[in-house]
Amino acid sequence: QVCYCPIKIGFHKWRFEVRNKTLGRTRVTIIIVGRGGSIQRKRFRLRLAPGGKEGNPTRFFEKRPNYPLRPVPIPDSDFGIELELSTSSDVSTEEIAQLIREKSGVDVVDLTRDYRAACKCNDRWVFMSDSSLVCSIDTPECNPLELKSPILRGKHGLQEVEHVIRVLDKFRSSIKVNYSMG
Image (cartoon, rainbow, N blue to C red; front, side, top):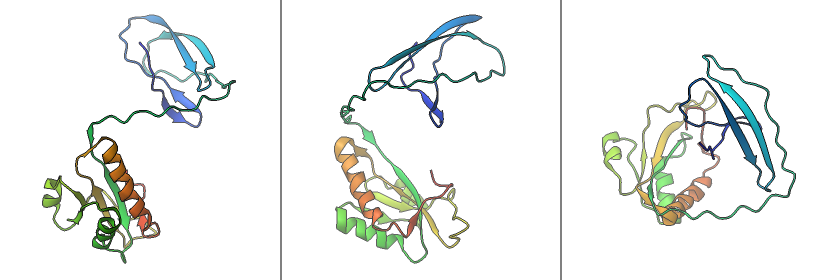
């Protein structure tokens, strides 16, 4: 089996994962290909045992110049996003929603006081409450909330997200994100 998506577990440290059924000992070869095309092969002998342990990491250095990254076509599929954030107490969600409407032409509604209606609203951007979010110690009077997108599609949908985020950036000093916001 092949793993094309290593999982980052630390600074310059990656873990590789595949789902294989095997009994007893087996040999694997990990092939690392750098962006410049350099290749490193490393053979391992695996033994399945409870409580596994981490061995010495293998170092890989790209010796060739990096190839430029090629643009990846955006699939024409549906998606949605949720932005978890908080505003300072002197900025209302209605103010932000109005500025988003004016500057980007994106329809946004403030339903922070009606959670049920916000959950049902899927045809426009919605400010809604989220009880899993908390204020930071340094800003205890914040307004934690979520900005939920409608169902978006492909390149046009990503452009709409960009327009909304550009407007939110104008509130940079009033909008915060903390550990409770994912």
